[in-house]
Amino acid sequence: MSDLQKKNAGEAAAQYVEAGMVVGLGTGSTAAWFVKALAARNLPDLRCVPTSERTADLARELGLTLSTLEDTPRIDLTVDGADEIGPGLALIKGGGAALLREKLVWEASARCICIADAAKVVPALGTFPLPIEVVAFGHKTTANRIADVLADHDIASPARVREAERGLIRTDGGNLIYDAACKLIAEPTRLASDLKSLTGVVEHGLFLDLTDLAVIGTDEGVYTINP
Ligand code: 5RP
Image (cartoon, rainbow, N blue to C red):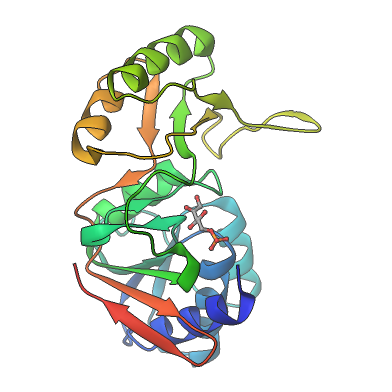
């Protein structure tokens, strides 16, 4: 993990934003570099839709004009980080527990740019545990059903609920996160659909066919990947 690489990616992605745009602001340490670089550009008439309370706080502090999906349902460009970037720009996201709002904003966007440090680019998805957002009511029952789905995908270890010292982690929407140590996701599209079909699963961190461009930070600058 390199902060310089994240900074380079965030700053380069800020150059894709134009005056008057509605911009989706991602969540995480790389997205924070983008938000800072965007605020520094001082472009006129921007409206920004944050994907988490954390990002909203940062953007507000930096003087960016905030909006919501309700007020601006069509977003011109979203820039956000990722936990893994696989072939075809299939992503794992949700390490920061913001996957639901992130996916809602991404799906409302005409263009999505993923920004990351070079270590996030992988030959196949699955080393980073896949986050799955689950309704708190009956979550252990839902976890058993997730385990059945994972077993059907030859993933032996059950998903684990995400905890901190103070207790279970809650998302901005009040839900829980389960992390599935998949090791290798051989069929991302089928897994995405099987997880989504479970009652109690709100969303998962597989972002498939949503990324238009990845801007990858290196120690020297950036390079881009097209799908
Ligand atoms: C938050 C995310 C983040 O984009 C992802 O976890 C990457 O974070 P970072 O830029 O801090 O490495 O999906 O839900």
